[in-house]
Image 1 (cartoon, rainbow, N blue to C red):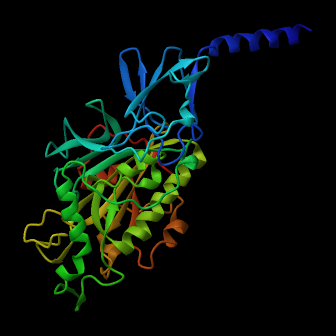
Image 2: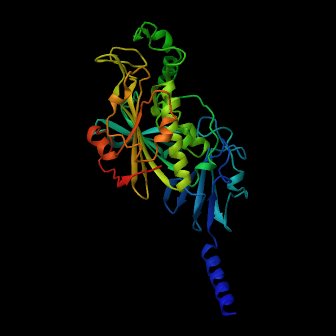
Length: 388
């Protein structure tokens, strides 16, 4: 009897603690391409919602500002760009009693890339954020971007994989690439990708054309849409600030494989992984003559020779660096390894062997990599090796 009484008291105490609280549930409350952008307002503090947990609980008094960003966009229910939901009776509701899960936009919300006051790459570049303009104010970030503001080839992006919600992400589909900072530059880049074979028709590698039906440059996402949960956030990864020109077979082979197995590991561990992805050095057919998508003497859109991805478990601080040689023609790719290969120690030898026919991939410790390539923030801390 005393045990039953104790359990009743405990249950009553717990119910009292959650009275008035409201939650956002993934995927139920933010499902579909047209789900609105969600800003969380607590007092005077307004932040972009991050779908890290399946259920995120907020105290009574919290408000959600829903936004359908982009020209001509608005909520299907009232046509307005924004609306406010208040936490009443354990659920978020609008003044018209509309619930979060029922709210959607006329079209996908559009993100923008905004320059910050921070510097990166040893103070050489500006740091940008992908996020949303709501009522004239910027809210971010979905992911961070370090680059020169024109072409993404030697900078990096910084994002998170939310392992506890990753399996609930919106399914992938291709979207059109764009440049939120300079729409005309985006159209010019579209043209460069479409006309690349004609532009490089006289460029040879080992006596063969540089580009053919198998080997050509594709829009390589540094922060991949496959790591992102919601529709609007996924669309933001198609901004050209997040795109580097990579060989199609390399991007769809090695790079896709290690991204996919890292996402699956985050899901298995129910962990949040932090990622830094970037390129360095320039791909060359002739020494000291870098290849760029624009095929200029001093190209704006250089093709990187290497692509790296640093992955860190945010809780254990274990990490690993994948380095991919962006060169399908190299006769001895193993000779280009930049750090001691630790694939066996990280339990990924079998996974690596299932990648492209010619191994252009290696994995190393962050300490070893960082001693050679000093592009990332100095305050990154990696404790041990992330094992798969």
